[in-house]
Length: 260
Ligand SMILES: Nc1ncnc2c1ncn2[C@@H]1O[C@H](COP(=O)(O)OP(=O)(O)OP(=O)(O)O)[C@@H](O)[C@H]1O
Image: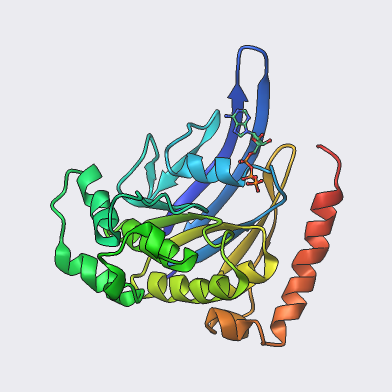
């Protein structure tokens, strides 16, 4: 039986309206993300990827169309959604454990120390639980942010370029780790990136957006021999450069196109 849709974006149009003008940012965007899958959103700068993520998170309201989570229309922020950003937004005066506990505090829920330490263990941060953010590397900080996002058990994760501030090796390692952890916890993820290899190495499906206005222009599904491998192993599979080439051709076309 096919997986049910965790996220449905249904003919979504969004314009930012001020007293002077209306800026159409997203036009008629339609796609769905099956439960438990990892979908990457690629597209040129300014095409509306973050705006789309914020709308799915219930932080922006559609001008037309609808977003649904597990069949329910999104009317505002939901506990079913966790977000990870490029910046970790850790509070400098709190320890790693204290930052993670904040996720429960904001929801007025009782912290669960066992769950906290199990997740820290899973991302190899158990020994850093009582350190402050300034004592951590960039990769450790993002791992702490991942635990803070996961600890309240959201079904859906929205990841807005969470690795882009990291050095290359850390970025590859963290991609592998996030993929493993999200699979293990059966999370659904929508992941924004500018990086085609990153999208191919992580995703079950890759959506390419065009701009002016933002819309979905193409969708790519990695072949099974690629999709069944973990992220780093995908990069050395012969199918990898073929898919890269296919996406790159389409991306060049999107980058060069004139406003619609
Ligand atoms: N509050 C706002 N009011 C007016 N325009 C906005 C607002 N927020 C974003 N925009 C515009 O919407 C467009 C899409 O922005 P968005 O940040 O979603 O793009 P993006 O694809 O995530 O870009 P990048 O890849 O550079 O992060 C841009 O042209 C931006 O200037």
